[in-house]
Image (cartoon, rainbow, N blue to C red; front, side):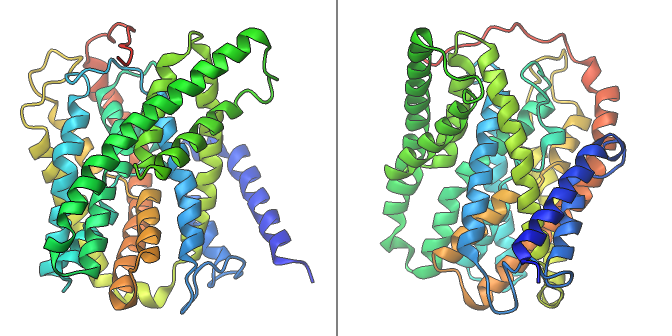
Length: 432
């Protein structure tokens, strides 16, 4: 009998060959590659060949899911940072500040209210649900993000920077929900949450992202002056930067996701040779695509019909409110008075605001936070409730956003983006 592992390798290899050689046709269709991976994942799970058994009726390997999604997210947020070539000034990053500072809290607490008043959760459980579903996905949203470092489009920039940052900055609210889940007396842990999980962890993430990336770039350039690194090995500097930044930041109890995003920004701005970050970006994007396949295959394989049907009404309520009311209304509130950088308009085009509202893609970040919460004490009936709502929401996002991304972005490019002012100067402010 052939080993299941060998069969898994065969199917994954066949999938890679199919989507690669067929990418010219697939890219013209109104669907994303993620939908194909999801369908294949379902066939690899309990309802197909049973080749992936990460989750069965009474068994869930949350630790493995956490580690896989953690790796995918840190590579993806570094990629987001590498893509962004913009001056580090508040007026340039104003849309990001609004999406993170206003929209993310609005989304979390609106979802928490849904959990509390419609799903029968207590406030701790409801806030945890909101925090898990709040981050937009930097992995599955590649079609609506910056296409390269020369892309100055504000919609793409906003979605890219939001995806890179909110996967890190949702963490304090995840911790809040976990603490509240364990201890109803918020006063016993609230001060520690503010000082450690909110202030220290964010500050440490920013500082470590800057310091570690700067040190690696300095070391790389010093050594390269004396002796050139093997060309085949050179791109592994990017992986080393990601792993060292993330691990060192986690050691000092900072937010590693935030540090890795900052490291991407630093690397993009620190090399004297501008081609070096571009080469790293190409390498990281290939890794990101490969890891995306594995993650969505796993998502498809853990879907079970019975529990999804048990929580279907609750899931559909969350999906409807999140996709069509909470996110769009939150974007509209957050962008009031926002003046576009590279346009003569005084406010953002209404079409741009609508697209910001629609493209709140949920994916790997939410899977990570769910698996992390399971490792920190989420269990029982509420664990099942939150997990199946999360899975169903991600599946719905993969489908509806995957189908709509291509036609909507084509419409945006023809009707809105081409009327923006010429791209700004390529001057980039260094970190001080």
